[in-house]
Length: 266
Image (tube, rainbow, N blue to C red; front, side, top):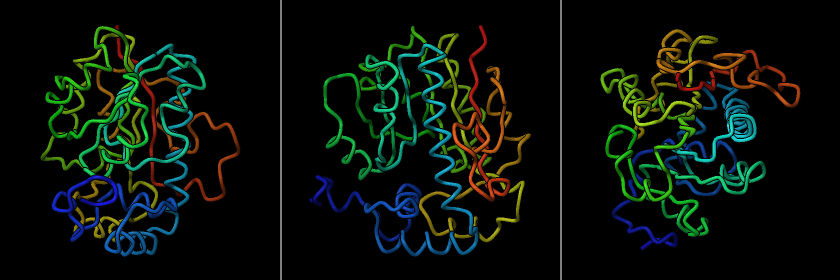
């Protein structure tokens, strides 16, 4: 057992993991040498990556506040949640509405162990080990269904995760399966890496050694992920420009993350 209650054989430390690379680049402590090397290579290939990840996190924070405070949603399903950062999604949501319920999902046993340790276990929040590549298993998962009532509106959070799906894995179809499990009035919050603003071939190459590849997509391709949803203003834009509450940082025009929030059609 590791200190996080995860069996050592469950952890692949031979290859970088996206959640742990993200943690390292954001200044966290839950990563290994292989993740630090990959993070340094990524920062060398895409110098704006740390600013971009913070911008992505800021987009998530603003989007969660919107769907809860203005959209009236009281259930959040966060798939690909990654290692904990502060404040957590449930903490952001509870600032607006303390009764919000949050189900977290990740495919990394370390992420689940940290979630189990940090969450209260009161039944309003929980974390499940699962994979976006099997969306039907997620919507049918009994632990998720104990938290999420799929007869009531849900905000589906797919933040910085869909770009780890290859085209062969059919991300649009995966999202459609999740969408079809949601009632009207639900929301999709999605961000996705792009190469629209700079050549990021070298950054993609870093992930060839990781547990998941990085699949950059264009604005048009990412918009297809929102099929069956109506994007709210300002639409699909670079993350720091989605309803900013502070001036976007210098160099934001080069940040390779799009973000958007959309409501499921009635």
